[in-house]
Image 1 (tube, rainbow, N blue to C red):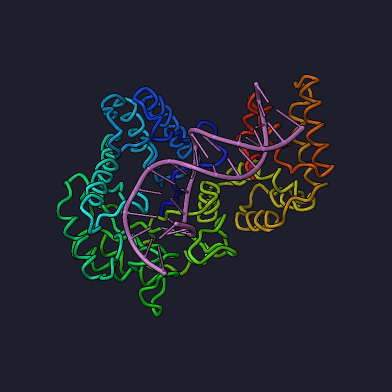
Image 2 (tube, rainbow, N blue to C red):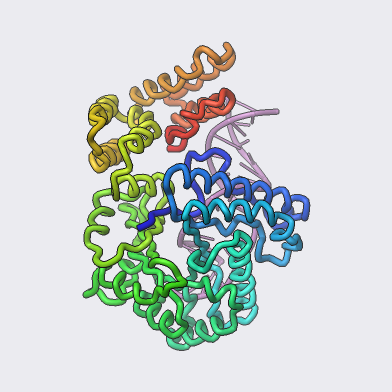
Length: 417
DNA sequence: TGACGTCAAGATCCG
DNA sequence: CGGATCTTGACGTCA
C-alpha cells in the first residue's frame, strides 16, 4: 500500500510551481517557467524519495498553458533530457505518479468545442507522463463530466468520446466518482463499458452516494475488479470532511484516528491511497509513519519539523511529546500524532508564540546584525502590542533562515501555519 | 449571473 | 521601497 499526496508540498524549499497570466505567456517567459517547474518537480521527487513517499500526483501546472493554443514551444523536445532524468528518478525509486485534469476538462460535453479542448488537455497530460518515460500504471484520473439533463445520454457521450481518444491517453485513463453527478455506481458502469479502471473517492461517495447500504470497503472491493495487470495496483482517493465547511470540502489535515479506522476496515489487498488534504505531504508522512514502523528516527525527524508549532501553543504539550520520544526502543507514532493534532487544534497563545519566536531567533542571534535584531524586536513588539499577528514575525524569521541557510528551520513547519 | 475549486500572479495598500 | 494583503485569472457547468 502506497500513500501519497497531490501536486505540492509544504516546507520543501524550491518546490513551488510558477505560472503567469495568458497575456504575459510569451515564448521566453514560458521557457523560463517550464525550466523552473521541472527543477521544482525534481525537488519534489527528491523530497519524496528521501521521505519514503512513493505515490504522488504531478501538478497540471507543470507546463503552464500546456494544453492551450498559446503553447507553441516544443517543450518535450527542448527539455527531453531533464524530463528523462526526472522520470528515471521516479522509476528507480519505485514511485508511482499520476495526473488529474481539473473539473473544467469535460469530455462528455454536448459542445464539440469543449470536447475538443478536453481531448487536447488529455493529450497534454499523457505527453507529460510519456516524456517522463513512465508506464501505464501512472494514471490520468478524470471525472465523467456534466449531466445536461439526461445522465444516461451523458454517460453514452462519455463512452463515445473515450472511443475517439488516442492510445496514449486511453491506456492511462481512469475514471473517478464525483461529489455531485456521477456516483461510484455510475462510474462502475462506464468503467466496465470502456474497460478502464475506477478510482473510488470515499468523500465524494459520502456526499454523492450510490448506495447507502454499501460501505467504503464494499466499494473498494467492487472497484478493485476494474484494475487490470497493466493498470498496476488499485488506487483510491481518500479525504476527510472539513468540520466547518460545506459537505465535500477537504479537511486541513488527515485525522489519524479516522484514517487508521478506515484502513482497518478494508479487506483484501490494500489499495494505493492518494490523500486529498490541505496539508499535503504532512498528512502523507503522518499516515505512512502510522501505517508501519518506519523507525524512531522517522518520528524524531517529524517532531523536529512540528516542534515550534506545538511550542507556540503550549510549552507543556511540547515537553510531553519530548518525554514520549525518550524511549528509543519504542515506536509511539499514533500517540505522537494524536498529541500534535490535539495541540494544533488550539490557536497559538500569545505568550507561547513569543516564546517560540524567541527560540527560533536563537538560531540567528549570534549571526544577525544589529539592524536585523532591531527589526525582529520591533516585529515581536508589534505582535505583543496586538498591532499585528504573528506572521510578520515568522516571515522575518523565514527570511533570516533563508539568508543564513538554516535548513533545519527551513524544513520545519513553523513558518507555514 | 454567481458559485464552485485551486493556485500563483498581479494589483494595491501600507508604513 | 519592501512587505503584507486583496483581487484576478483560467477553465465549464449548473442553480
